[in-house]
Length: 197
Image 1 (spheres, one colour):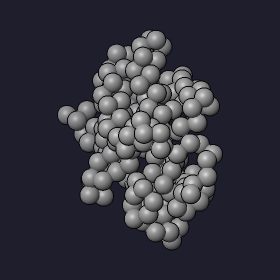
Image 2 (cartoon, rainbow, N blue to C red; image 1 turned 90 degrees about the horizontal axis):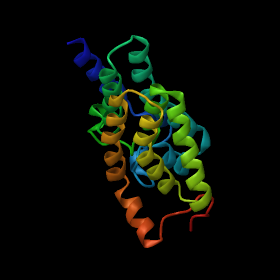
Image 3 (cartoon, rainbow, N blue to C red; image 1 turned 135 degrees about the horizontal axis):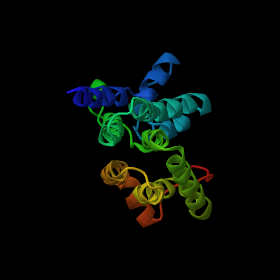
């Protein structure tokens, strides 16, 4: 019963939209009404600048990190620890407080990874940097790192529920990046550092 309550609480934490709250507190517009309409750090950066984007990124990472690291610190079953990460991640994608319309989930996933094990998070970041350096596509780098994350969990000898949870989250990240994938295939996806027309 406590485990179910913790998962619900994790989902509610994930449902807190950092992008929307940061923009409201800073007197900016609703990030869902500008640019791509995605309530995430990248759209906030393009619409309102670096500082709001940095706060958004930090908030999205923290809401994935905290439920996992607290569950681990309380010595809860690894399945609950992993489930807390999935719940927070789903909360970010489908936030109950904001009409179930959330972001793409990468920043929150990063928080979950670091909450599970700092080495797991580091592997994700290194993979992202390597792919981004070669391709100059942020979306491709995120997708490749997400796809590799379950394998990293297994290679690091982490509890099996961690790898399974990451295997569940990976398809959701790909689903939320469907438009990016279409643009990558068409060769129209924006590259890192490229000026927008």
